[in-house]
Length: 186
Image 1 (cartoon, rainbow, N blue to C red):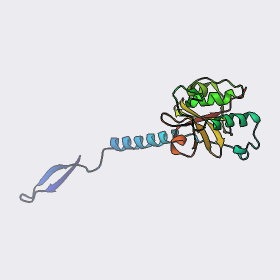
Image 2: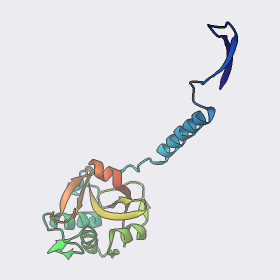
Image 3: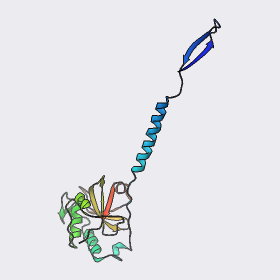
Image 4: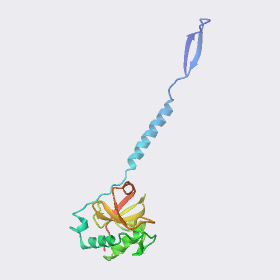
């Protein structure tokens, strides 16, 4: 509060009155500054992991790929159009992890049953190549897995009422929920 004296118009006597300052208290400005800095810090911590891929050639033709990668991708392509079935791991119906189990089973690689178990059991790689697994979810919990096919495409069993299909990795949903990649081996 500010204190000031001004003459009263009727008496010409000085009258003391108090006026209120029109600025926010220093504590409010400090709180606002702290909140702004905290938001900037949190925004820096929430960066999303990028889906990094490397295609050594036209993956669809199998150039520059091992026979195992070609067999995994071929098994996945053969399943295109198969209905999604929760817990499914047969040609009558696949869920995402069942599709991956089947495809990698063709080269003698045994994988855990669920996408989350697969994610935690396999060593993460920095760059996905055709035939590698791509995991999606939130935090450290994988809820979906697909097989990278090259050209920023994956084959996966997307969910109830749909069929095994090819999706672009450039779809915002996949970019936002990407957790990492793995290259299962014997």
